[in-house]
Length: 297
Image 1 (cartoon, rainbow, N blue to C red):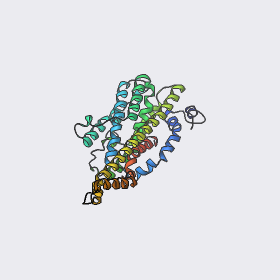
Image 2: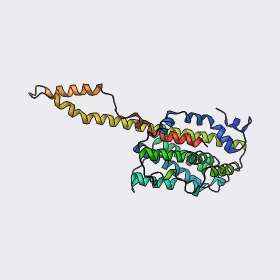
Image 3: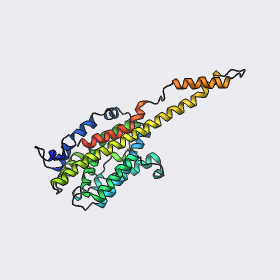
Image 4: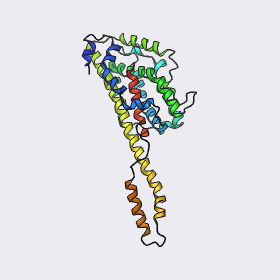
């Protein structure tokens, strides 16, 4: 992987936007080649996993935008302060209400990896605000780059309303042209004054932002895998009485015990879960796709 310093030299352009693109080139390629990305493009998305992903994103954007508001006048961020055009918290609140109902704040939870991401955002905003631009760039320009593609995939796979309910996160009403806006954003970002040392730290922070996203969807994959395995066991338990019934012998000579033992042996021979594997990886597919799109900018 090219070092941050080599992104500033060795012929690489000196502008921050180009340096970020160069410094994250390898992780971009890794995200592009993941099975997560390929499967998501096939529309393998279930509603429950999609809701889980979107609720995690809510916590991320809540923290990011709290710190942006705190630092909107900081010289290291002020040039790229576009709340009307970019901020996603309000849109995610609409999506949460659509998926979970009016009491959604009491329903959604924040997994460990998401909490770590949130903690990093608060640390940067409060202790190293000059690095906040790295997180804003990787998230917002990624949302603009891939948002429409993801919106169409999710809308079709989940059969969501054509009017857009549940997909407010992917809708940027304040941006009439994503291409032109991204050009403006890059120009404003390149105008931020920073020395080479600070620029190197920003590049490192952008890569850290990527790794934080990876950790989030890997944890979500584990949660979904555990849920799928549990559903499989519950399905077996529900079907066990039906298998046990015919095994009972009317005269009762040890019939119940014998039937139960036989049934348990049959159960042990069955696969641990019959839940389709695509349900196991959906959460990671969505965030994997988001991670890819955040670097396709």
